[in-house]
Length: 164
Image (tube, rainbow, N blue to C red):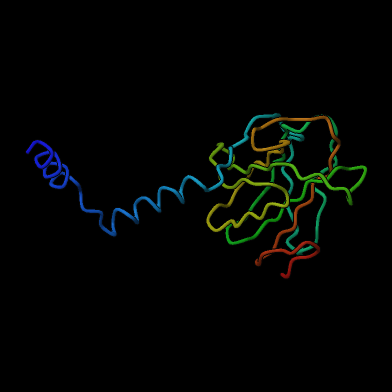
């Protein structure tokens, strides 16, 4: 009799699993597998002057700078443009050096982040942006000299050239 009561109680308290429950669990698992990017916004400006791209779609050198990353460039951006940023080891571009790049507006509000090359699809911000360079998404720094390029146009850029 006691076993029957336990079995009856267990069956009555079991929740029916619905399709909504399954979707919620799948959504949670999916969210946990997405990459989490840091917002590395520490560092000093490389220059006090903001760089303005010429929007030809060609790669333009923003700067050659030495010392550690953990620095940032000021860049004038226009809404409705695509910007692709490349950060390379200065002494050997073929070897490459892909920094972690974070872009904010002039007030420090996050706009984009990711590894170089980073494509920034700027749909609604016009003004001065800050482009920060770090070794990785943990915001670490190093002392490798680097060259930073930007390509900008109305369409997304490929590795060599944008199509204006």
